[in-house]
Image 1 (cartoon, rainbow, N blue to C red):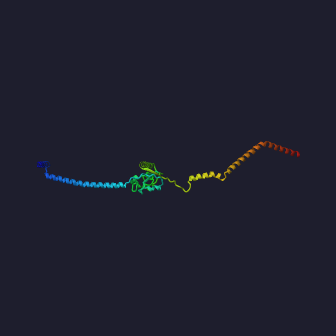
Image 2 (cartoon, one colour):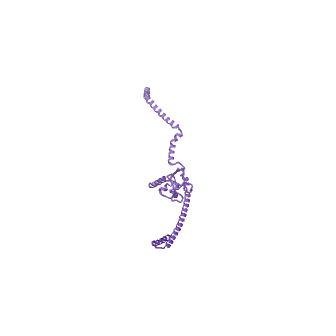
Image 3 (spheres, one colour):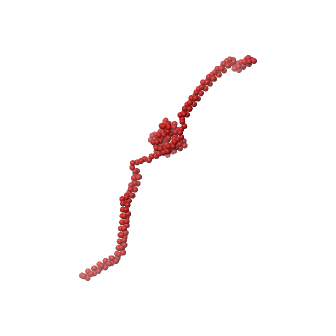
Length: 253
């Protein structure tokens, strides 16, 4: 029975494939061997690559530690802000716009050492951002002399920083101290000195002088009034006396 079945299979193989059973089985065996060899080779390569990638990925994850939460600094000077320019990896990376300090540590690839905007870190780069300048003279927060378009560009930068980064402090503004008073202050001081000088010399002198002048004027007015009152009688008496003296002189003659 088995032999008859085998003979039928051989006849079927020959009829459908045109190959002898031995040739067909040999070809199948070679194909299976090649398949397993390829599977073993590529499978081990994939496993090794997978382990390698997993290992490198693990190392990358170990290097990229999570960023600490931003620390509020409050008000700092320009010199203190320079300490956060990215040179110390343990410190946050900070940058200021229009006196407002932002933590840009999450964009260290741009603002950190070697980044395209690394020179802006640790500074108030308002003027440089407004002018899109990379010159040292523009790395400050001075906005004097900027045009309308430059101020609009700076405003766009500020909106971007406000929406993306956390504000952690402000830059302390310093007031320049001059050796002497300014021209306006000197003029004002001189005017105050001139006003206060009479009172400083003798506070009672002006009052006494004013009283003396008032008294003198009053006396003059009073004397004038008395003369006007007594004037007619005195003049009549004087005329009578003169007339009598003249008459006596004529009689004697």
